[in-house]
Image 1 (cartoon, each protein chain N blue to C red):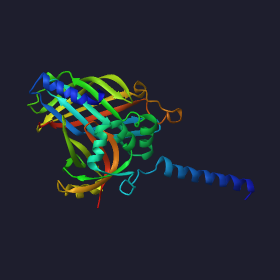
Image 2 (cartoon, chains in turn orange, red; image 1 turned 60 degrees about the vertical axis):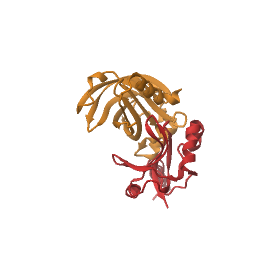
Image 3 (cartoon, rainbow over the protein chains, first blue to last red; image 1 turned 135 degrees about the vertical axis):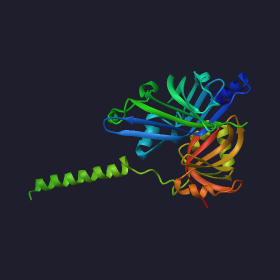
Image 4 (cartoon, rainbow over the protein chains, first blue to last red; image 1 turned 120 degrees about the vertical axis):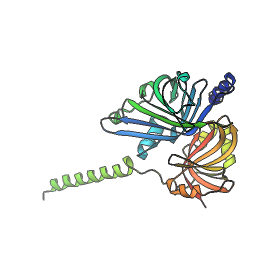
Length: 184
Length: 144
């Protein structure tokens, strides 16, 4: 069932409202940043699949863990092999809604505050998330931006004692996805 | 110089050398050179995509994190931000086109942008998985 989550969300959206507009991208960006006493760690993923239904506010994204690129090869290895266990949990997903979607005028250019609420799954663990972000409407494109912190412990990501000073217990996640209208 | 001083100096130099080597080859080791690395698998692009589409888990076990060389008919080349992406389309889904998306190494961006759709090309890159719509390949190079 999980496999078809995107299809289900979008299908439901279309059924609820036949003229719902869907915005999508396959090249959204998610960055995470961790600042610990001994080291700063930053990684970027520019292959984020994202969809937004303007009528319902349904907002989903999916990220492949092995698409995160680090400055240092060793950090990337540890991230995939030891912390996120990317072979076992190859993807992270967000499945939720922009709860104030009715306040956003997709036909008028501008920057709108957005409240995003949903479930974030990382490392096989799902946690509820509620964050503020913005939606920028410009040139027929919608750019969603948000910045928030997550705690590694909430997602059962354990850090060995030997490197506990190198990695912060919480990491900052920055999301920036520019979506365009899906032409059916 | 007394023997014990020589021993201490020798150990200190050996220790510093070991620390430098560990830093260079382990902590600060460079990313793999994906252009030069030998592929783990050489496959037809359509067959590669179908393996993920029909059995995602099995294909993940086989190909995720591996360097794959694929040969297939190019559908188009996209530019997104600073990325250049060679796209092979095999299916139509709720997100539109589905297939294989190969993000090119910067060195191959200009060359990739000159490629004509419908031409048969060979691409080598790192497979980071299947996101239910596309197989994602990164650090890709063109093979002639």
